[in-house]
Length: 118
Picture 1 (spheres, rainbow, N blue to C red):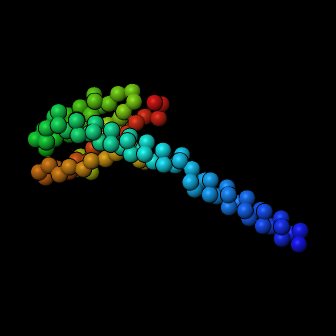
Picture 2 (picture 1 turned 30 degrees about the vertical axis):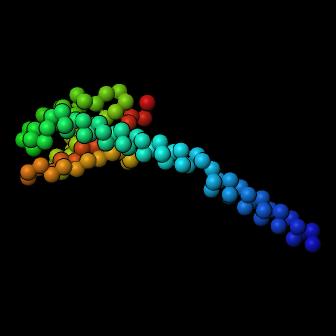
Picture 3 (picture 1 turned 90 degrees about the horizontal axis):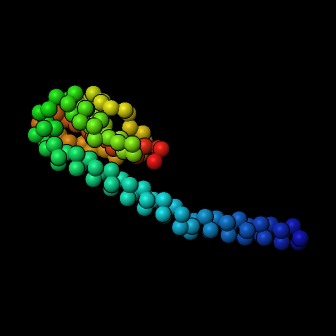
């Protein structure tokens, strides 16, 4: 009988810990923070494209697009692109925000991410 009591108490304890982990607000805060960061990064990409214009993205040499992205990057945010399957700039880490644009016959995928030091 004593073994059953210990087993039941252990099961209740494990269930309580599992419930506390499941209903903890921390994962929700982390997920919402990640959504805010993704929206901010997407906004940076849209700002870059709107400043230069879609016609520039379509017609500018890839080297010019790459140098403009490097100039737009700073200590906290990095921007890069893949233009017609050719990457320019550093490779993005997993979780980077991406925006793909078909401009005429050119396919451009812009990527933005926060640097780890921030």
